[in-house]
Amino acid sequence: MGFFDRLTGKTAADASREAAQTQVEYGEKASSLLDPFKKIGEQGLNLSGFLTDPNQQYEYLQGNPIFQASLDNANNVTSRIAAARSRLSAGDTALDLSKNFLTSAYPLIQDQKQSIGDLLNFGQATAINQGNLLTGQGAALAGGIVGGENARAQGYQNLFDLSGSILGSDTGQGLINKGLSFIGLG
Image (cartoon, rainbow, N blue to C red; front, side):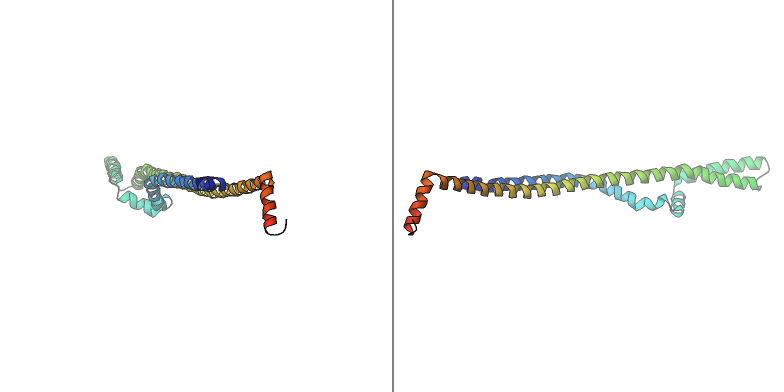
């Protein structure tokens, strides 16, 4: 049976499909290794509204103890300087206090935006890698199917070639003549 399977291409077709399936299995394993990184990127997507929404940025600042400490410190310094100059209720003091808010907020907002951007880039790279692995798996399966069918077709061609060789030989011609005589045609 082994010789016939080789002759018809069955063993080559089976091997081609098995190789493709192995490639798919390893591709799935490799893709699963990227899943934790995919989750990190998804966190970036969940936080992406922060990049453009001033309300989210303001809420972030209100809950940030570093911002609060920096702002309190800047406001205390500004208030002491204004009190020493007897300008505590002056308009320029109010302007200085609002500048303190912006000066304290800007670096924190920028850092948070950068962190979210990094998460998004990380997630995008992971998605690209997983997509490439899936594409490779599809190509491996397709290659296995095509390889299997090519092997099978070559096997049939081998059988036809062998049949033609046998029938074209002196022994083959003798068998044909005997067969024709047996049925009354020769």
